[in-house]
Length: 265
Image (cartoon, rainbow, N blue to C red; front, side, top):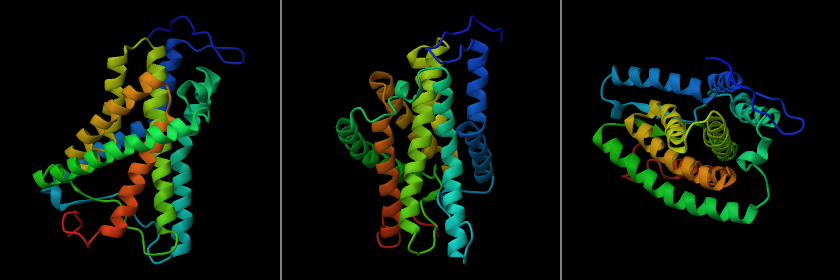
């Protein structure tokens, strides 16, 4: 792809041409959620070729050192840090060209409104998402999702909450914020950019099965459109954190106690 005229930044920012933008996007996705999408696709092919997918398990938060709780905790915390660094990298790249954190609404300008809107969004999306998962699982299109396989120790709930926050920050900053801003700079229309963002979100959930893929594509279309209209990722981070927190902690509390919640056989 031939380089275009560099896009001028604000004072203190580097000018970045079209070729530079494309390379930057691919490299960031290559060390984060884009690579996760590739691994998820390979895992899905492995699941499909191993037999009925409903009988297989997608473990979201598993033990890193069974039987060694302190080592396990250290590895869990290191894993969370490793997974959230790409979000910080995305913000850094935006600060070099594109306006920084403020251009994606990653700030504290409207905390009350962001929290309220995020909570309302979580309440609406969370219930629909659970229903869609149960439908997909009963249809045989989804693996059995086990949000937690952590041992019953004092740090289990805090780590699960930290995992929910890490997922939310990484995904919303990169997929809803950074990517949509960069694609706009490349001249993509809102619909085309929204479709790309939603498909990326679905891709790295494909390891859960087709239900996980399509459910997250739908979530990506909704969250991406909200970002395009509001220009803020904070309410999306709030909503995503609440959704995952309820899913992770709720699974720990309810697994094996209620008949409607699928658990590993």
